[in-house]
Length: 207
Image (tube, rainbow, N blue to C red; front, side, top):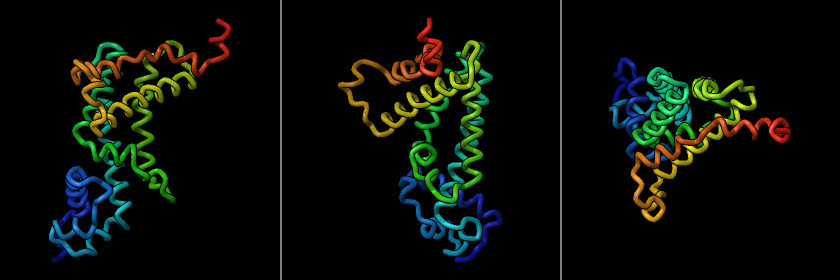
């Protein structure tokens, strides 16, 4: 086996992205990945210091992709609420189409590593900020606490639904006659305008 790819880093990431969807990110092996690409075992380490570095790069790329999806969705609706719903649908579609990448981004221990991967942190932060801006646009006269409470509440409901669906935890007795479209509509129907009292408790108590 030889090091023969002109852009091995890109080739490795493409192959790894496909492989994690097949076997799960927990089972990705740099050695087996190198063998599948017909390069030496040492070749991947010229671009990634270890397996975790490759996974972090994949996750960072996923956050970049999701941020781009949000930006595209934000241009599809006539109102802030419609744009937020479009971004929510895009998020759930991303989770459905790329479940292992989604898990790597949102359910792995990459953010517990020390030192933290700077590119991953930057990509995740940017992605969050894009979504947060979509939420903020739906709120009347919001302050920072209000925006953050609403954003986290919406993210939590969508994230939880995505994982339940991904793990086949939505059993027939739970779903009844509801279609997948009905379920998505229900998850995305939460009204963020009802959340400010959580962030502005003192003001709400007075009213």
